[in-house]
Length: 154
Image (cartoon, rainbow, N blue to C red):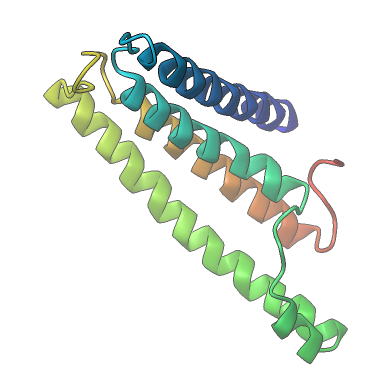
């Protein structure tokens, strides 16, 4: 699982770099009245993939910013309880996200939905988001079983 999460982190980095390259190239080419057809669609897809693929790694290394206001108000036991409540609620939220984004991807596949300018299918984007939500759930379970430990060392 760790390797899969790291692979998705690299995919996220690649998507962000691709998003930047497409945007810069499109802006420069528009100076010569040549644009990249579907640049908007590609940037949207890269943005969604970049965010979705980065979340499991960010969670695995505990890179999220904690709600410091609440943590400073509680002692060590209170912090563990608060963290456990947050992890369980996150499990529920990402469980629902996994289910509904997968269902959306299957629906898009069946309907044959495509990008407006490119004509490429879009069903794969919610499926990748769903897979990353599932990976998030694995990380949350690990953090519940091993409180205070990172799933992946940064």
